Length: 139
Image (tube, rainbow, N blue to C red; front, side, top):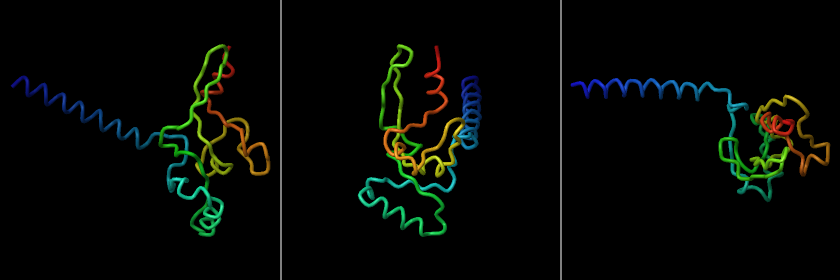
C-alpha cells in the first residue's frame, strides 16, 4: 500500500512537471516569428532558386521568402572555430540570404541587417548573436 502511494505521488509530480514544461515550450519566446512559416529543403530547387522565388512572390498571400542552408529548428550543420582572447571557440553558423532576418522576424539589437545593395553582404558578411558578441569583448 505504501509502495502504491509512493508511485502515485511520483506519477502526479511527473505529470505536473511535464505539463509545466510543455506550457513553457509553447509560450517561450524563441527569438523569431514562428507563425506562418513554411520550410522547404532548398536542395530540391537550388539550381532554379531565383525563378522559384519569383514565382512564389507572385502569390499575394506570400509576403517574404528567404533561403538558408538549414532551418532554425534544426541543428546547425557548419561549425567555425576561431581564437578569442587566447581561447579557441566554436561557432555554429548558417548560410542565409539577405532577406532572412526580415522573413524570420528577427530583431537586430545593434548593427544592421544584410542588404542586397551592398556587394560585400553577399559573401562573408556575418551577423552574430549576443553570446558571441560578449565573447569578443571579454578581457
